[in-house]
Image 1 (cartoon, rainbow, N blue to C red):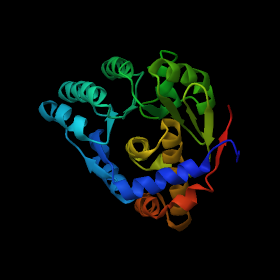
Image 2 (cartoon, helix red, strand yellow):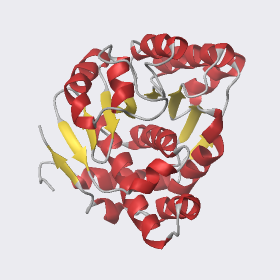
Image 3 (tube, one colour):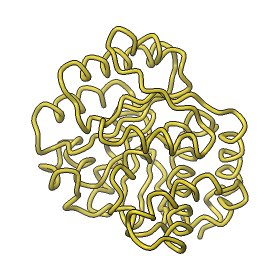
Image 4 (cartoon, one colour):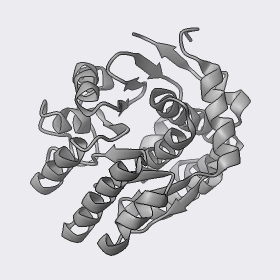
Length: 269
């Protein structure tokens, strides 16, 4: 753990999340909507799933943050994403792009590349997704990465410079960068990879943290550290993937600002 990482800033973000209840507009994977909503509620945020193109722009303008996740995208939801991103940009609403399974499928890849040029506060994905989004790879095996976070580090730094935001690459040790700084977040548990929607929920949690943190990098790091601490606590009491999922939501609720002061994070800049 490095003293260069401001753990007090992570703790302050957790405290702010608990007290301010940011409204997170989620245009997300239909497979994971319930888990995503429950995760946001557990940490103190307020979820909303406003998917109609006719409403998405209006809602993005009043939300505290927006999540755009292309996991089960189709023509109508893609239009809602475009409308919401434009509205978020005009209103100054921070938003997170989760390029699920980008690289292997043309439609979602073209859409995610288009959206990435609209200034997301954070791009959050696995290594293969981030590399494919940046044009440096062909994508992974569906939602599973075939590359490591370290494989994607150089590309993530360049992508952060291109978008003007933060890029967070998930893995056994997460890598988070704003193009100048590189922070690694350790901890967590392998059962996260056996829980449907854990990564997608992390995208929503990242949006919630970015809404309340004074710095986007601190917000993204705090979200990843929060998830890792909760995963460790859930793994200690569960009996397998099914009970882990429920225990993880409970543990997300229990993580405090003081807990983030002991997060396994280090600055590798």
